[in-house]
Amino acid sequence: MRRLKAIGWHTFAPAFYWTFTYLLRGVLWLVVRWDVTGRENVPLSGALIIVSNHLNNADPGILSAGIARRRIRFMAKIELFKMPFGAIIRLWDAFPVRRFDADLGAMLNAERILKHGGVLGMFPEGHRSRTGYMGPVHSGTAMIALRSGATVLPCAMTGTEKLKNPLVLLRRPRFSVSIGEPIALEPVRRPSEEQVSDLTRRIVEAIQAQLPPQYVAPYTGIEGEGEGSHGPGDSRE
Image 1 (spheres, one colour):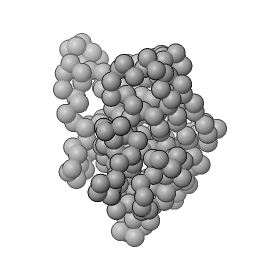
Image 2 (tube, helix red, strand yellow):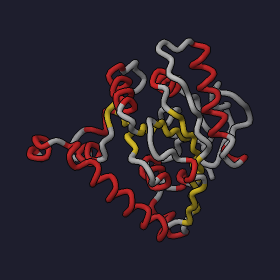
Image 3 (cartoon, helix red, strand yellow):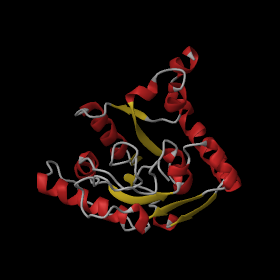
Image 4 (tube, one colour):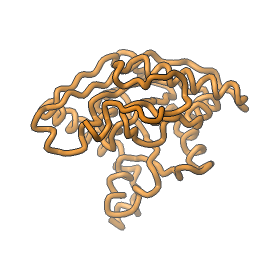
């Protein structure tokens, strides 16, 4: 482990990422019924922010397997970087973010990745949905997108909320990854609150437009999840 750290995690990250991603694609074809639509919408070059709803801890890997054409760098909560599990997170080339805090370091790291034409993966909700519906969305994704001028690629995932128990794989659940049309942006050095709010709403609407009705809460906008409403990810199903 010390030798890995001395050489540098980034040295092994690309090989680890692609090996893991294609192995996962093979496993998914065997154990679940899954489909990917819209892969032709993935830009093959240039700064890109891939955004999606968030249903399960496995979503980053499944989303990467669905995209397949670009290597995605994900933000991950700082707690996941503790060893020994943290070794996998580092080899995945994720980078830490302090949730519920204005983490300037994470934002600068994200902008640095995009500046070099990389791909950033973000779940604007900031955490998994407990109901299956999209929850309140944070403005950080829109802020990074506007400041960098990176293209935003809205995606939608369904079915992964069923992975609460590994035994569910015996029934070959159905997963899907839908890849929408890119949202092209021009860089804005100091985005206004109105610009950030408008792009945040566009991102939410672009994701929700790809979700089946049962995954869309009975309200519109980004205000948050309605009390007492239960979706496909509700534990009482």
